[in-house]
Image (cartoon, rainbow, N blue to C red; front, side):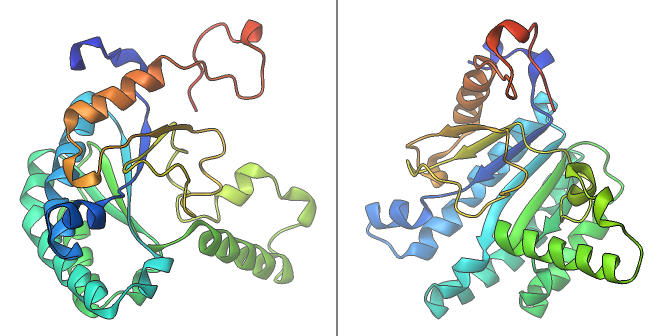
Length: 249
């Protein structure tokens, strides 16, 4: 399947909602955290798979602001797993020339998580291949509200005129200001919604939903999503007749 992918039409940015860890664990007769532990291989496979194909940005929805409402025991276990995983995966990031970044309300994470993230980001800062962004304690509405607040402060301080606000300017107030919008968003587990993820950025993204639970997601499934993406006509409001060739953003 990989051989069928057109290397000239690889999306610059792919976003992934990693869903289904809990259901996968339940199918094994285990606790939900078992699914989260087994999801690490999927993260590694997809990160390596994207880097191999020349994807420039990969954003993974790792923990939403709503996830704080889950049982405390599960949240605590997730945070500990996050610390261990980040420290363990730095050599893999280095080997694949991947730079780590984060978006979200990072200061709401436990100190140990913040320290591990900061160290990993510093260690991989010189890598100039793909950028892997972890969305942690993140939600699209939270991000947009923060952007509006920042805009309002700049208007109040006389740094900005209301008349100058447009799509491009607003985008510069988002967490993703230095990253192009995703051309492709993948969600696993069969759920067909975007769950408060990159609400502004996904406006013109192609959405790919698969029934595969995240712990079972492998490079072959990534290739399937990419082939589906390449077989779609991206019109951005135009008619088919106006689209002479595929447009990328």
